Length: 294
Image (cartoon, rainbow, N blue to C red; front, side):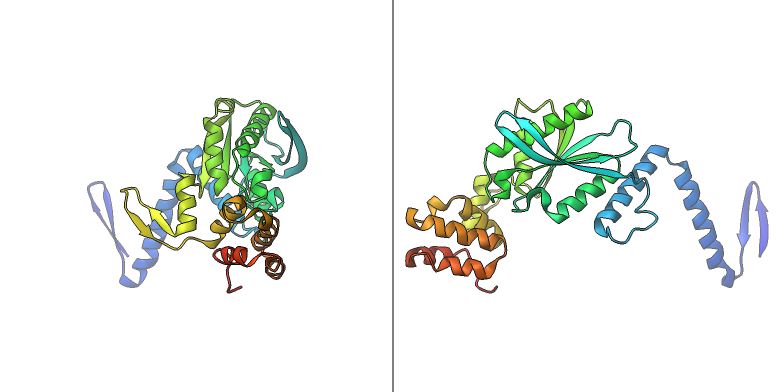
């Protein structure tokens, strides 16, 4: 190696075999200096976000980064009293955080509701980052129904959490159909001051448009045109289950409800057994929505 001074600059001449190692060292030093020059808060926030993503992706195999900024979490089951009755919920509280922010995490359409293992894992990981998480049991969604009553449940959960944390507002994250309901709750004058923001994950924009697509496999595009696209069968099952009166005669509705619910619960053999109670016309109607390859 040789050095050559030109003014205030130092030019380094390296033999080819040592050049790669030298450049690697310089690059690493530059990276360290760059990270050190960043404001503390953004860099800290990025590390916390990366830690959360790693914990959600593989909770059973912690790494040094996934354990960054992790708080112990206390989980409790509680009942929230609302004008329409008691609302069951689970609260995830980070320990050692003086004034945590809060978020209401609303489950999607699934019969396990707040007991769904993926929801529990996600809520716990989120709370480990220092955020209080409340998961309310929305009975309509747990029964595979999209119902306006759920708006009140979401709003009351946000009101409860805001008061409990003594915050100006809390956030709401809604999964799947709960995302659209969360947006409606935020727009409701009764709860608009409780909800500071909404994160809608996989939410619907127009429920009527989505419903038509699930039944017809025809999707209306923003420019007014219509495109043929196979809808996911799960969505069609949910829609039919929540509107049995539009697809089955009154005498067939109890058996159709049982059969469709069992399909949604992935109890396929039991679902086929329930289909035997249906009239031939109802069986034909039911076969339009039930998969045959399971």
